[in-house]
Image (tube, rainbow, N blue to C red; front, top):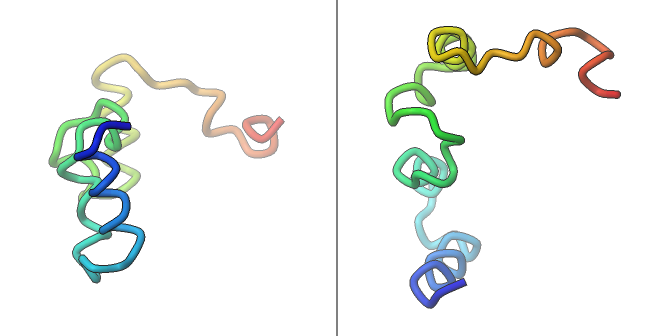
Amino acid sequence: MDWGEYNFEIIDRAGVLGPFGLAMPLFMENKRFGDPFWVGPLGPTVERAWDVATGDFDFDSILPLYNQL
């Protein structure tokens, strides 16, 4: 970890950002799993629709019990 990332983790884990700390992953590219900025706040249904639209959808991930094995 470089100093910038390390300092951000210290501030985030100490709770200095308060409730805004929950929104920080929306602005950090490496925490969004490759999705655009607007997909995360719209919920899991939009995330699945985005996966279908971009061709990244894995049908096995939505099967109950099978996806946990």
